[in-house]
Length: 99
Image 1 (cartoon, rainbow, N blue to C red):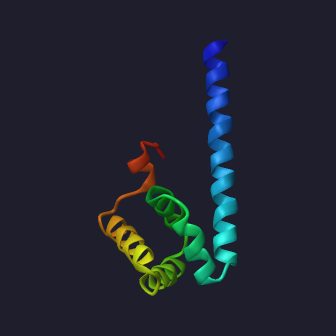
Image 2: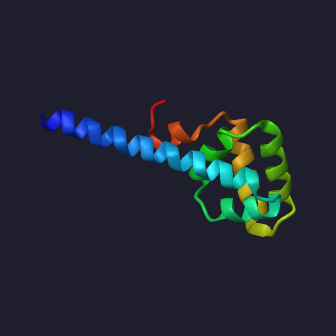
Image 3: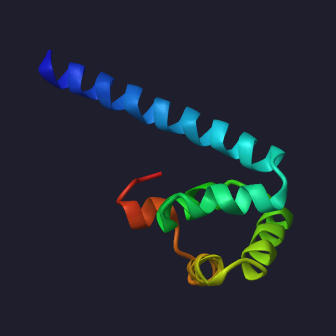
């Protein structure tokens, strides 16, 4: 009974996280580029990668261009995101999450 409860709890948390990601994606994609960069700057690099993995490449390219036009911290974050994408890193792998 305990194992079943733990599994159900884990499944609920995973669904809640997935729903949160979907909502975040919708907000970011509905925002103008500067606002989206500001919102992404508030998150961790791993969270940025997790969200950007789910976006179309054109949107990612626009966001990376906006990071490159930002302040020093935003430029650095954009470079970190691009390096992670180039290396094929995924947020799930970095965070220990299995797809």
